[in-house]
Image 1 (tube, rainbow, N blue to C red):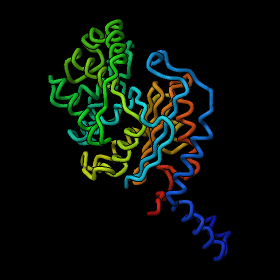
Image 2 (cartoon, one colour):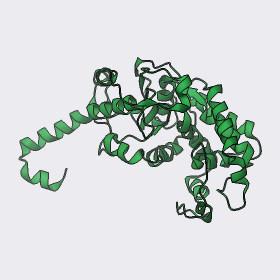
Image 3 (cartoon, one colour):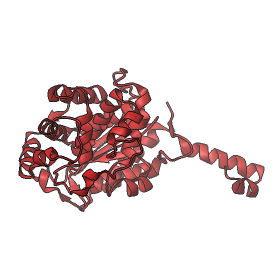
Image 4 (cartoon, rainbow, N blue to C red):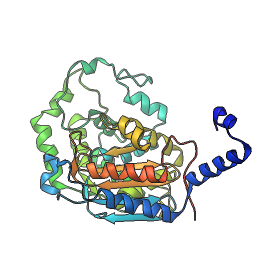
Length: 337
């Protein structure tokens, strides 16, 4: 407790303050259920946002599904929790798990740097020229760095197998989304751009990497699956239902750190409002993780101008506020057995 607070409280008030803090951090599962249900009911009728044109043909307006899975397997689901949607950039979460299973955090930071050092900078010569890409270039580089090199099918299997181990169910390929990426990367001549000397550095064959990343972005999952995947991360690699470890728990922290620091126009305001490391997709899904607690996943296809689902983001804000969830809190939330 801050010294200034201690000075103005007598012993009785001090004890009440400590009790209050404990109550704020120790909650019942009934509290969790009520927070999810109340937040869902509060935002389900929102009419804001528009469906992104890229998924207009595969999304249904008004769809809304939410899931919360704790590290011990207890869960709460509401609405269209079994409706699948393209992962888009959310796929970088299992990709980062695979990469951190093959590299130390120090090695991975060095590979991510444009200058080739471990400083975390992005000031290499390759950034002098703008690139036209239908997806984020950092995700492209991440996929290119997965081993084995020159074997896209093995790489793809490593990521999809990790998804299955973490979520308990395989992700499926959305053919329509995959065709979109194939057409767009061809129209933008992405492979040609990457093949130019001094272009954005990747670690494998440009054509194979572009196709592989396009397939990974086109994988689809439900909020039920996503929340389970997130809860596995929150439980240091242990799937809350199978009890099996999907990955070494020592890499869970850097995975969460990557979630908390990547996302242009999204992550800074999001972390202020919720305190929950998260990834989102323009298709309308969001996955948020709180280590030691569990994960939240929500999906509604109507997004704002910056590609963030209006309903999903508002739902998570409300749940975080109602339960006092935040990775920046001085104490972890404990859900009573």
